[in-house]
Length: 261
Image 1 (cartoon, rainbow, N blue to C red):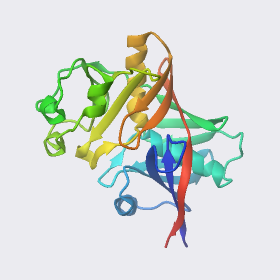
Image 2 (image 1 turned 90 degrees about the horizontal axis):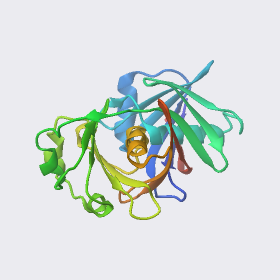
Image 3 (image 1 turned 30 degrees about the vertical axis):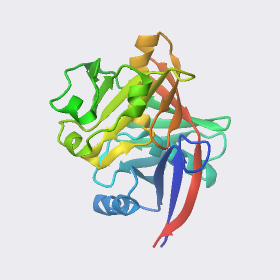
Image 4 (image 1 turned 120 degrees about the horizontal axis):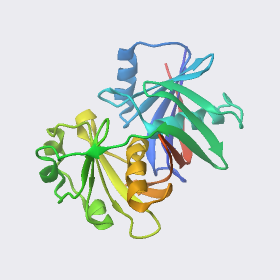
């Protein structure tokens, strides 16, 4: 029986921007090894696997190399497909059961807003080799549940980074977010690198904003923030911090529909 498969550009207002994710709608459970093979075949930063449940949907995320516990852009892409395919009514909330607990997504006009757990970070010392691999002088460094976050001097430094990915692959961390205060319409900008899990640079990373939101809330004294992830594709993320939750807003566009046979 063919399985519906989609490619969606998340955190994008036009095709070929934002972060592409594959979304696979499963008619029944599949082995982990099969899902990993599909993710490797798709060769995108994330492939999401969605399975209908009585109380919502099961959702899992795989990079080409491994399963991850939390992914924002592939969650946004999955919700987008459920509404677009008519599996959810326009006013329904998408409820996903994941390794990071229950995650919900609601429509907000033309955009969507995800309810995610905040990932507060603790002061840390940069792991050996990180500064050299990034090729930039790091200021404040903190560590959250998954990754390191490092602030640099300016937006120009963030945009100009040319990491040594071979060296970065040897640093003891899943990934690192580099950030700075925005110099224009954005409150802050960032880039995210995770070669250890098969992603040299992720175009727009929802989970990274679960720690960027609380970090910049404390620095700027505001709960509502407008962010930009300054990868080559680039993407805008609206961030709202509410206690232990972070609400991430953005749009998505389907660019491919097909079937696995």
